[in-house]
Image 1 (cartoon, helix red, strand yellow):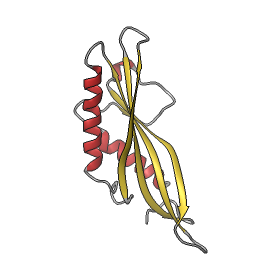
Image 2 (tube, helix red, strand yellow):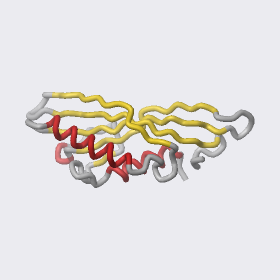
Image 3 (cartoon, helix red, strand yellow):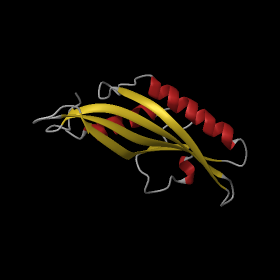
Length: 147
């Protein structure tokens, strides 16, 4: 089995694969750029996680707040804002279909959006980041199972 964090990330990748605008162009890395022939596309990666203890003593419960970045990439000479907004609509609506991430989480919330524009190259590249907060609970001695 794997850490619940990875299971949640995998669930989000599956949930966002096959959307109308990005199709199968969904990737799990922020290290390598998306190839031009894979745009528009989405990158999904863990940004940070906060852990609080819900109980004291041995085998404490851990209340975890995981921030996952979902980045939509668009390369176009025109209408890039519209395409980016469409990607965001599709992502947010897909995430909302199961806020428990298949029973792994207590809640999923899109908490912010930020866009960056680059005019380097032959066409502008726009990156929109949806910061998504996923709350879940584990037991300290078993972080591979959600509670």
